[in-house]
Image 1 (tube, rainbow, N blue to C red):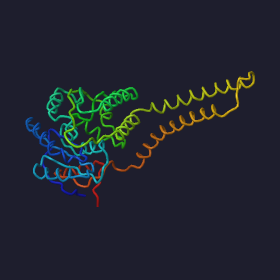
Image 2: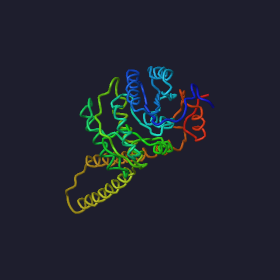
Image 3: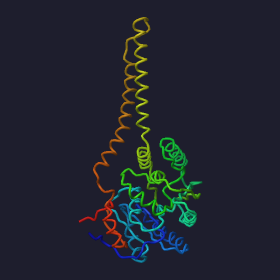
Image 4: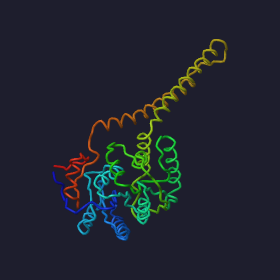
Length: 338
């Protein structure tokens, strides 16, 4: 089935830049101008793939107008908000470039770093990720928690995920296709890239303040992303739960022996419920926490078992009809609404 708004636009390009968007009407035109300024100086054939993740403002309308004026610009418009990591995945699914760059629309990650990434790719690297050496405009709380998260994740997982990095990176086509073949729902792109392997290196840069608007990753979403990262790449929480359960059981047995000794051979015991209630609350709290850890993993199994597509596309603009057919033949996870 055809997709609304699809237009034939020529052969695959050298560089695809994937830009996920959610309520970015204040910044998206500036993002487009800065990206095109950088990319045109490179003298390479390129495309911009904007993915509208269910924005509630004028983001989609603005990008649709840009697409009409510049056929190198394409838009994937979701039927609703599916989340940042899913939007990045859709961009990679639809990208045609020999190389693929992931960059957010808020301009905290400077487009001017892209040529340096391309140069490192030409040296033979398959993945060139941006490493933040400074983070401007962020609170001390955000900086401390971000640093702690990356180091905790490295300690918890068997995959070596570089610290102080985000999704801003350049990937060779074969890496992008490898990630697109992974259809897991709880996605953590930077971890998946590390898991995939290939030759990887970094480019240092200073992360700027957000150009306009407000962050799309408040504390609640950061905690969810952290949970996805840990549960997607590590079973250590389950192993720690088992070890903790064994230690508590051993401590409980030892305490039982102490209580029996005091009751039978001394007069030190006193009737009362205080100690019993404290111990009961402690053990029940720990038990419920361990059940919560199990629930996180079981919930992810449940989501995977349903087998639903990762996202639903309401409209795709400026895409080649041949690309649409190839995506359908490959079983890409999108559906055209009736």
